[in-house]
Image (cartoon, rainbow, N blue to C red; front, side):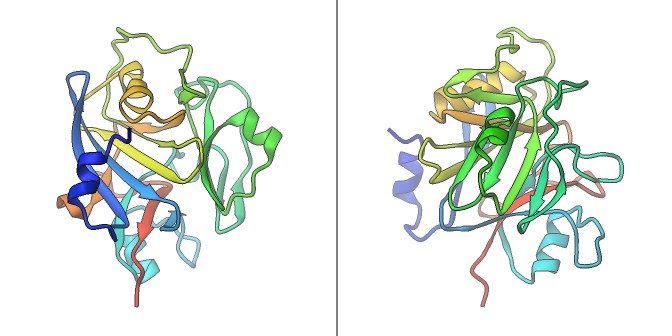
Length: 238
């Protein structure tokens, strides 16, 4: 049974993105579902190579409205991606497969790939399969790997933050993005994707700086002058 049954009944059949607030393990989350066929992209730089950094800058550069957007991967002080990044078929940053400090290096980490279908890959699986991704962003840790939580997650872990991430279906025909509205640990965030959303693979994007743009909910998060990579759905335009 799909978790958005109630929302799907109420929403217009033509809706490109469906978002709603849900509760899971005594915490609030906002989840946005996007179906394959919508114009889902990653955004980082403008035509001059400058960092876009905000949802409004993405809309201005694209000349189209965003139906949904959130930050999509960790970045350095200069906003360059920490890990693998591909935009419109052009690779900006190679795959980082080695263990390292921080959440990104808490292996296994993973890569969200937007191509003929949409999938979250564990990084070594991505390297082995070499999928054709028009857009790709690497982050970490993985939240769910083939239906199993990341092995380092603790049910009572005391490291809690606002967190966001993405999960994909086994068929690659649907991506579900989530952001916590309360501070949560990795374990509880992972179970949101595995147990509540029934998604076999999910990837952590970031914490603390997590931001969401969901106009259908009248939500546009602010608080940072610039983000790094952004994922979003553009409307059909004119």
